[in-house]
Image (cartoon, rainbow, N blue to C red; front, side, top):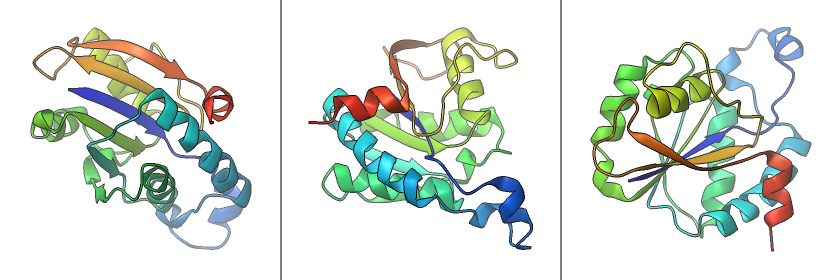
Length: 169
């Protein structure tokens, strides 16, 4: 199994959005965030030509990012996964991943620091001190030889948002 971990693109400012009284889960991407992610998704496609399954947190900013990625890959369907919420437990995310290990290339779109903690757990077996940080719109790929679990992944690559945008064709 190959796992692409993608952080959502630039969203509206948390504090400014909070003053609207709306739930943070509704906080959308900014216009610039969408524009940059469209370019970044093209670079992602060059770095990873195929995605078999694409899932996103139900929060608006992750769902919008996933829709942009889906478009870059010819209109993939996006699965919503509560296990990608920032408050989700890693053991639930591991269960979700294991249930999809036969999917081939799985891409997930979510939030920090949850994603860095997940990647660190999969790489090292611990999640308390992240070994990588995903900036907004960044991605990394982890490969699993067989079992999906703590300390079972190999980091194939990690690309910052600007690097992804430069890769676009």
